[in-house]
Image 1: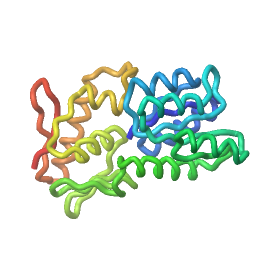
Image 2 (image 1 turned 120 degrees about the vertical axis):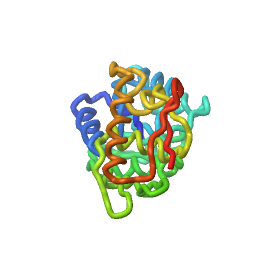
Image 3 (image 1 turned 180 degrees about the vertical axis):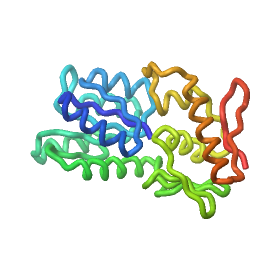
Image 4 (image 1 turned 30 degrees about the vertical axis):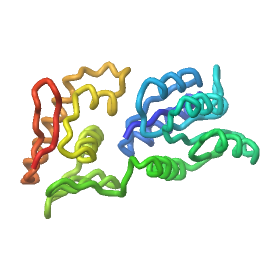
Length: 222
C-alpha cells in the first residue's frame, strides 16, 4: 500500500516514514504543499497524510484543489492547531480524518488504516487465493499448515497480485505502486522479487504459481 506524506518538519517526517515503512507501507515524502499537490495529481496513492501548515501551499489549499478536480485519495490532515474551527474547515474541505499534534504513532497508524479501509483498499486482515492466505497484520503467507514470513516488498507485490487475481500486472505498475515513479531503482528489481516469491511458494508446496507473460507482466495462477 502506497502513501504520500507531506510534512515540512524533517525530523518528524523521517520518524513517520520509518514507522510506516516498518508497517510495510511504501511512502513518498515531500516537504511543501506544491510538491504534495504535484505528487497527488500525477500518481496514484492509497492514502495521503497532509500537514496543514506547509510552505508554498498550505494543506487545506492542497486538499481543496484536489477535491475540486475529482481526486478522491483518502487524506488525513495533521496540524498543531487544535481549534474546532480548523478541524471543521479541514473536514468540510474533504478531509477523511484529522489528527492534532502531538500525537502517538499508534494513533496515526490506526487512522491511516481507517481512511484506507473507507476507500475500499483494505478488505480485512487477510487476503486469499487458492490455497494461499496472506495476513496483513503480521505479513505472513500461509498454505495449509505451513507459514512463511515475507519481506516488505515481497508482501506488497503479492498483495497486489492476490487483490487482482488472474490479472496481469506489469513491471511498470509494480514500480509505480511500490517503488514510486521517482525511484532510481532499476526495473529489473521486479524480476528479482518475483524470483524470491516463487521460491517461497515452492517452500510452501502451494498449488499457486506466478506466470510471466512475455513483455506484459505477471499474474497468479492455480
